[in-house]
Image (cartoon, rainbow, N blue to C red; front, side, top):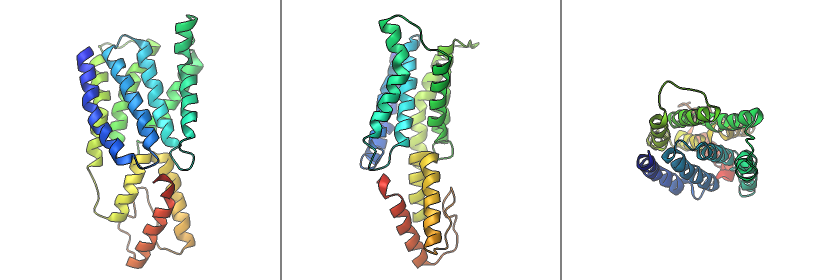
Amino acid sequence: MFWWGWLAIVLGGAPLARAWQANRRTSLHDAILWAAAAWLSWGFAIAWPANDDLAYLALCLTGCAGVAVLGARRPHVFAWNFVALGLLGVMALPLLESMVIRVHSFNVERKIFLAGILIVTLGNYLPTRFAGAAVALAIGCFLKYRSLLNWPLPFDDDVLVMIAVGGAPWLAWLAMRRSVDDPFDREWRDFRDRYGFVWGARSRDQFNAATRNANVPLVLEWSGRSNQPIAAADLDEARAILAKTLKRFR
């Protein structure tokens, strides 16, 4: 698994580099760095599948990358890194305790906490175009999480973990290539898919409140404006409101 695992990680670095190029000037730039750290840790976890400590670290960094997205709004985006670092310290404490004082402290509370972080992280992207990538990564996370709990399976899941985790960035890349013709919907969906459900739902509510106050006859649905009939002047005003709503993420 050593060479195959690292090959999958190296190949998956291509869409990750594309994500960095597309988001380096947005508030997601720190979250992409967290994702890169998680991706590197998955390389070690896949290359040495019998090492549960490497698997646990990969799961922790995956959760931190997702939490970094939840704080990716200016002006506090940099300060949010300390929240992610604190979270990593709390989750990785069992590793330190096992190495220093030889105590196995991965108790039930910490298992539930890690599972909750991963559910929030991956569930944030299920209502977006990245649902396929989120499901693939969730499968890899679940299988590694299962190994930490010593839940038996009737087959060797190492290859499945490599395929699921290694294929997740490519599924995300393929999803981003699908676009829409309407400029308004394209701008909205690009934001929604990059930031996920939490920021997408909140920004949609803020936009709809702003258009109601401005008497603009447009209601933003999760999929966009859905070809609602609207005058060109009103559409231009709606796009200006959307730009103001999303300016802290740019």
